[in-house]
Image (cartoon, rainbow, N blue to C red; front, side, top):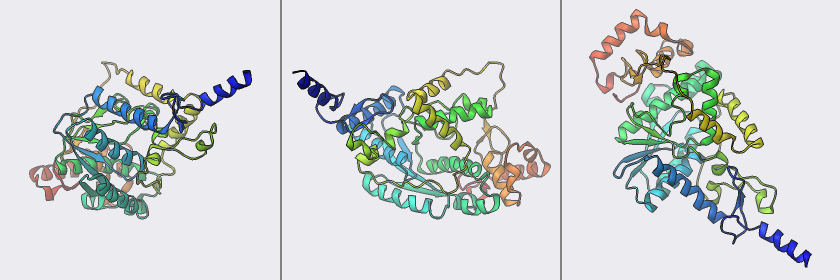
Length: 372
């Protein structure tokens, strides 16, 4: 009799802890619950829906661009946004927006995935390129700058390229696939850098409300493992890597950028992974601690203005993209790395800024092809 009860209990432990009907297919990293595939779909999508509704991210009738790179995060974001928009009648006009950095063997392949997503999800696609906006590709920049500071150029240029593409599409919001792991990493990086200004806003689910186009992060509390990987040894089916993208058989590109193996963020990422292995809730706790940071009223914060050269948002006379681009064009690629006040205060740049200020046509822009 006892043996029969033991077998029954063991069999019961193999059932999904939510529906108690089907066998579990994965263990949630956030809660360590063993759940079946159908329940995983439900809780994954419902949590994102509650984040969207609870934070009032969108209004009916808005045009929303989805930052699409072809990777797992952005592919899952595009799929989930289109599904939730249809299921819950958000009333949004959705678009895919991609940036072609000009990285041979990486971005050209991932963009082919995005083009397939355009057909699969029925969402219009817009691609903007570094070459068209700045006159340089990342391949050309790396040849000049090397692999040490290349991510600085790419990050600055990509952020502005997304805003310019969004302006071209005339959208009201831009959504990105930044997940909980990404935000926790950013909190740590800003602490290590002592960047108070960014630390005060990096955990916000919507940023850039005072800029050209607000950015939203519906995946703010979604663990990367819930999008990317589910290893577990408790069951035979857990021997495979189970993901939302895997279960839904989504078409995505999985290769990492060939220029980012030594990126500074990688060290923070490894630290976050170590913390998660010891305590799964560490990621959410870091985000919550970032949300609770308060900047002293006596702390002088940078004043938001606009770049005198291209009109993009900037706390200096020139935006970071214009400073970096000036260095590249002058054959001094390290000119914009680190502090660059001396560049902005030089007499030559003041004269050039005045000349550019007098001619605000799209063709005259030194940094990008759109006028903010």
